[in-house]
Length: 266
Image 1 (cartoon, helix red, strand yellow):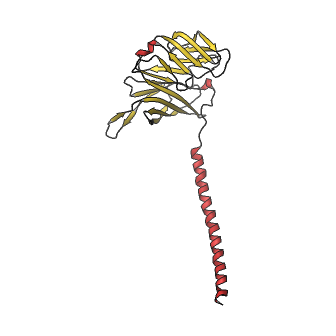
Image 2: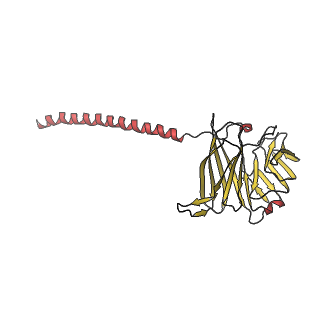
């Protein structure tokens, strides 16, 4: 008799246990789903470098005398934007450093100067050393947001070197006159100044310093495609066609004036 009474009790308990487990499973599954959806929304990344080259802004990035600061300057913005959220990352020794901020674009050029280092709450400053270069991401906010991300390379020219190259190795410059420049920076600027009527065939490369750049040198740029190519330079106020030779995708301009920006066009 006892066994007959126990069996129904066990069946009821089993039903309750299974039913409770199913309910708990449904509840537990629904909550993570909501959290997962939220996380997915937060981690969606906007595509970079997709707007046409002609509509990209002209941006300058250059070192300040002393080597402890960088200047970021938004010079021209063909595609309307009211502000830019920027994030600059760089390699300092074996560590990755960086900073981010918002820059208003009410009046152009818009610029800001940032410390290559850190400052404690008490005001003590630690300067970062052995800086190699990094990347600069720019998120322009306007009627239609867009994101650009380009590389830059930093040189502390203590050995008075005369040959330099971009981070992607597609731009090279050689000049004895660059030996006197203590700090140099090569940046794949996302866009170019207005007035260039030809089709762009390579990235634009700027070379800046903490002191004026002057003299002559040889510039080599690897274009995106082969074709009828030539190199152009921007001297700070106007575009200059440079006497250059072409071999496949490689365009070389020898004994040309040192300028702030170079690019290959078709």
